[in-house]
Image (cartoon, rainbow, N blue to C red; front, top):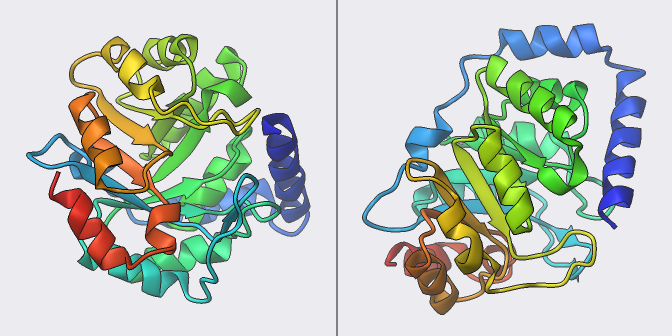
Length: 256
């Protein structure tokens, strides 16, 4: 499934490149104001940080929420105390778009993450051109040499890479990059199975000073407490926010 998702995202990027050349997108990216400091926004605090996601659907859960105005939801996230807004831009299975990202960027003053299956520099340029401050790099989707190249390219644009791992070996690869923001996803993107104990098993592999993000398997406050006790500095949450009252749900998480 992960290979299919990456291939689909790259195919969609190639189609966009036929109408917006790399040179054009690069010019737009470089014309953007300096990216916001996501590491500062997610720095360890006396409560859990929340990366709140605009998410309409997923391959594992199908349709989750009708979100006609992602900017309005993002504004709620910011007012509710989220540190970062994540925007899914994958269009085939998650029903997102770069238009969503641009709308969210205009609506909030906190950092914005482009959540996408990224495999080439063009997609990172698109993210910056649309106003993203962070991009997701999935270790399982990329050979180490490609991962290193895209990680460095992201930094050169002044953005922050969120490097996502799903196994202990992938955490080691993320750490070897020198990544300052490492996510551990409880959902295996090849099988879509959940391993709720994964973060707790691998958190100690992430060095002190690196921000630890727990992803997936967050439905209620007990899940946030479990991740916090295991060493998470932040949680990335989508489904629980778009299927419940986002303000009340955020408030309960931020009490942890």
